[in-house]
Length: 465
Image (cartoon, rainbow, N blue to C red; front, side, top):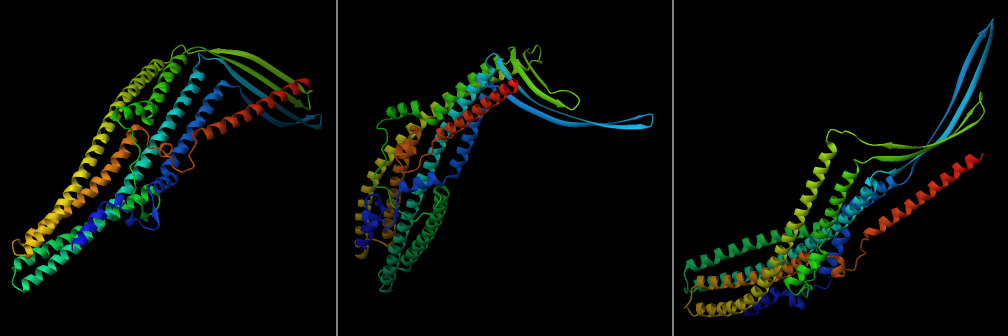
């Protein structure tokens, strides 16, 4: 019996027990890699980032000339009856033309609009990093949840076996008249309670495995308990310093503040006069007239005199939005400071609890062995034995919880500091580069500029003709 109890304690301290590791185990690092690669949520937000990248091209296009073309072809048929003589005539006409316009001055509104979209893209990139932290954090929690659930099930199964032996021993002692039927009933009740707890633990394990499937993208197989804690900032002050400069939630809000400031400037600039350069060139061909090439160029100056107060309302609205985002930054800073402090406190509590519970288990095991011996000699009752065994079981369960809480608290410190990323964890994944798509669409924009040059050359050739 003592050997069984010793082995159960060793299984509880699985973090350091290499002989319990399965042959084909999956590490925490592998689970994080799979969660990163299989996350549909990350894929969704990467697509949203690409959509935001396109907004920069759309906004920047207002700074370039707009060129359009139009062409039509028609035929007119006429019939004339003169002195009994009928004459029919068909005249065909066709023309093709190009129209171009370029905003020369608008108070900087278009330029500011392009700058706003760039800030929004940078904010969206930080939002993607923040989402990456949540995805990896969910994978860590799911991984630890499965390990905790499986360890709890093993502990409950061992507890059930121990109480079964106690019940058998109680029945044998009852047969020889050493104890009463009440002692046997107590052992039977405790066995039923252990069976119920075992069923509950198995149910929680099924739930934990489902959470793992959702967070990682695969079913948990033989999981390998992590051998060491992740590297975290040594002090709260260090974590706060890192978070203040690189936390994605803070950087996202900083970009949003800049975008809000530019939006306010853009709205103010939109009330200024606007000057546009327009140009047209067209070629007409008709059976009744010779070919005609026409061209025109002109400047248009426009502005708003009265708009029912909408511009002033938009300015006030933009200012209120700016104030809201700035306030949100202060709230986020306070939230991060609180989260970091809480995570460090939880980490220290978990360490202290684990050390204390390990000593508690040693003492509870000695007490359990002593109570069993005394019960065998008649100095203790069956209830005393069952209570001592229950105290030992509770201590082992607390050790499981403390061990996992320590790991989760360490990863919470990383998350609160803005370090729970594939880059900091050095995960072997093909990292998503948010700038790659942006560079590709800028390249396509250059191709579009080449097309505009080709149109310009075509117009020059038409003028020559």
